[in-house]
Picture 1 (tube, rainbow, N blue to C red):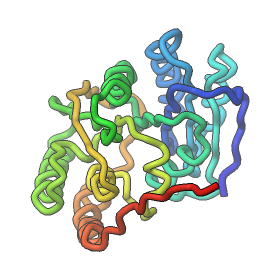
Picture 2 (cartoon, rainbow, N blue to C red):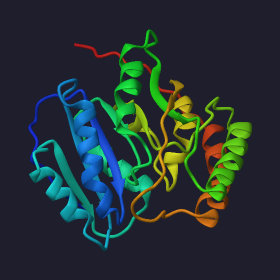
Picture 3 (cartoon, rainbow, N blue to C red):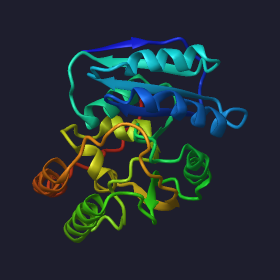
Length: 253
């Protein structure tokens, strides 16, 4: 169950930025400030932090960011830790913009890249483009994380044929309505290109910046990233073989 602290208006927004966080008290306020600097005066937006069962001062840090001159900041809290995909889904469900931007809460994604991805999504000549993925061309991670990501991306790309070089990148922009129609399962955020294509939409990738983690500790390792992702892959392949295409409808008077 999630509790929401909503202080923003009900006006239509250009983009809702959704950030899942768990025990990231030192990263929240700097990240909120960077998002504010990247978007303020350019787009109407909200910044939604979804606290996934943190046991530190993450929630207090979100409130402090809002009180420090960033009223666009909102807080939603999971009563129990439910995972990154569940946190993303909670934030998207509560968002008010038609376009969603997500990024990880560890500070490694650069909020300055959000406008670039959003502009590609909104100005595309294709009405079918509904997901713009970040592509971390230069990774600032440990050798183990780079290796596991390279293996996972290679296996996913080879089996799913989604044409996406970096499906695990946390920074992306996508259509809220399409996301809300997709099936929900744990770790689904790692397979969004294939899932959007399953719904009949296009996906493109854009090079983005990647930074070293300077605060907090990583929640992922070999066991809960590489091996779990490979197991999930077979479930996604099962879904792709059972596509239910959207049926056009026409309203009658």
